[in-house]
Image (cartoon, rainbow, N blue to C red):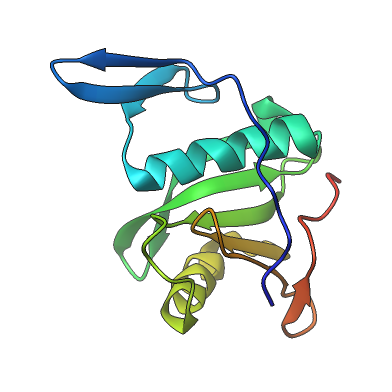
Length: 145
């Protein structure tokens, strides 16, 4: 169930202001507080762009998703060349386990997006699911379509 993804050594731009560390998001083009979850999110973004050849222009970070009148945010959504959502990534801090609750959270978000693939990660545990015909666990992120 745990995919064998190894994040590379990416050239992150970071800065410190008033004792707070920030990291630059190459998709949103601004600095964000470097929390454990943001660390995972930035590694996911760089992995998709640098290791899997996903175009940065087809990634959406912290995409607002409205489900049952509740406003939620998908950490990363990758779109196909036809502008259809194809991959929803749910990032958690390294100390948050990837469990059934995280899977259910992503499936709830997906009621709106209808992506074929989910990637749930805390940086160490990576669960990638093909949900096109039931639930099938994958060894890696699907190729960019």
